[in-house]
Length: 193
Image (cartoon, rainbow, N blue to C red):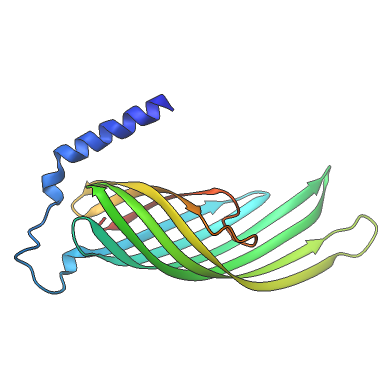
């Protein structure tokens, strides 16, 4: 943990030293500026007894050096197998599709505070495999709100292209939330961060 904090403060210091690179002259520009568009998102994949494929693009606009906002889309497929010794006893399959809006405040040039209200539509199929009976499948459809709040860090990799990491938490904590009671870790790449 101590090493992680030292690395974080070192990278923050390097970014503060280079901060003038990211400043733009907003006083001379009026109206829509295409160089302030933010395009990006994240892609995640986990395979095994727990499988999840997540595609989450986002688009937005950097209104100033300190504020950005936009819209996001969530698309996920997942599957979870429950084992008892050497056989599967239950399998859950789900799809999630939704979206929302997001906003960021940059107190430091590369450090941001993130807020993201969203609404997801979830379809879930649960199949039970009793030992001496036929399998039983149940299908449910529902919608669930989430409010992700957290912070992150972006690092330029050249020009306006950057890589970002963030840690978020769903503060609403609906019992059917796809985020459960866990921290949400996101790593992504984008343009205009």
